[in-house]
Structures are given as C-alpha cells and as structure tokens.
Length: 256
Ligand SMILES: C[S@@+](CC[C@H](N)C(=O)[O-])C[C@H]1O[C@@H](n2cnc3c(N)ncnc32)[C@H](O)[C@@H]1O
Image 1: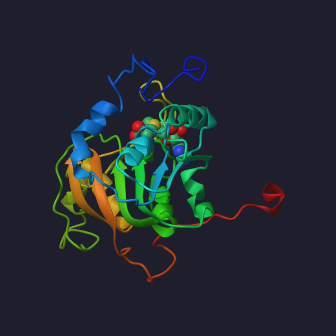
Image 2 (image 1 turned 90 degrees about the horizontal axis):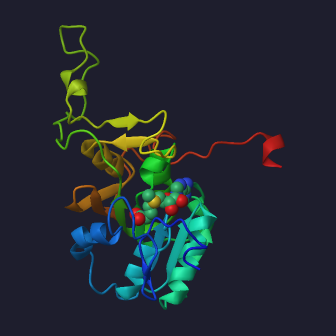
C-alpha cells in the first residue's frame, strides 16, 4: 500500500515501513518538528485544529498525539490526502477528517479553529498574502503555526511608520528600500529545486511583515522559519477595501 500510494513527501513509519526513507531533507518532517515541538503545549486539551496543506498528515497526527480534539486536515492534492487517510487509519487516528480543499477556499469550512497550522505552503502559492488574509478572515480562531521557506538575509531593517516620497530636499527614494533587511519576496519565475510550484521566497523580514499585515501577532519564532502567532487586529481594517482578503469575480460564462 505504501508503495502504491507513493511518492511520499512525509516520512512516516507504518508497521515498520518508512514512507519516504530517501527524503532529500532527511527524516522529514520529524527533524523539522523536533526543532520547534517544545513551543507547542504538550497537552492541547481537546482544542480544534485545522492543518492547511496537510500532505500525508504528519502534523495533524502529531496534534492528535498531543490531545487535540477535532482535527481537520486539508490539501489541494488528492494524492497526498489518500496517503494521509491511509497513514491516519493505520496509526489509530482515523477520526482526523481529510478533505480536498484549497487554502483559497477555507471560507467553505464555515468555522474557526483554536489552532491553524499553515506550514510549508505559502511559498507554493501565487497569491501568498491573499492566503494569509483568508485564513485570518475565516478560520483562525486563536493561534497560527506558520512556516515558510525563507531566502535572503536574516536581518530586520528599522522602517519608519511613514516616510515622504523622496528623502527631503532630494529626488531620491528613502535608502531603506535597498536595505537587505527590508521586507522582500523573491519571485521565482521558472523552477526552484525542480519544482515549478515554488513561486516565492520571502526573507525573514517579509515573512514577519506579512504575518503582522494579515492580522497575526508573532509570539515566538522557535525555529528560524517557524512562527507561532496569535490572532490580532488587522492593520488598516475599516479604512477601505484595500485591507484584508479580496474575492475576485468570475465572468458568468466561467462561473457556470
Ligand atoms: C511542502 S508541502 C508541506 C506539507 C506540510 N504542511 C509540512 O509542512 O510538512 C506543501 C503542501 O501544500 C499543499 N498545497 C499546495 N498548494 C495548496 C493550496 N492552494 N491549498 C492547500 N494545500 C496546498 C501541497 O499539496 C503539499 O501537500
């Protein structure tokens, strides 16, 4: 079954057989989780969890192991959901609900979750900030566990609240735009690591700025690209349609 359901991205041991023993990142995601596991409560006390981009369900199952109550695991790719259902059933977590759903459609879930996990998905999206906005608007109830691939410097530039268009008395833009610690997303037009779904690589400053901008306060950064956040005010909310999610209309022909 493990072979028939492959190839796997999550390396999970089922009845003594590993699903992705040759993963290019090692024993993944266990090695990653080990670096930030302590940042999460050992006992989740029955809290509800939504795992977005769940893949084969490694994190969903870990949350169950820690006493989560209702766990919903969504992914846009049915291939990975089949793996998740199989692994969860084999390991005694058959009550995890695996559903094919894109992060762009989370409003369809119609409810909020105590903990939303959004790990390793942002950089695979053409519209990453929209995804964060939709999560904030529709499903994030209290905490967000977030991870993204990051590239570029680790520094954070000191950016003023506002700045005149030019440096006063000159026709020059402010120098902070050229600071490596300015929030910056690298757009990947072609492929990265043989994967055409890698669209963006933010630097650290950009990941953090996007989280804040979408209405998430960063509580901890337990690993260099992992953030534990809580739901906060959405900056500029109420100032007009420019803050928060958007819902592009489709032509009537296409919608049918
Ligand atoms: C790099 S894997 C990360 C898996 C897991 N969250 C982790 O951190 O180990 C990215 C996952 O996101 C899923 N994904 C990509 N685009 C998505 C979308 N629009 N909505 C939901 N899931 C998506 C992929 O199918 C894949 O399972």
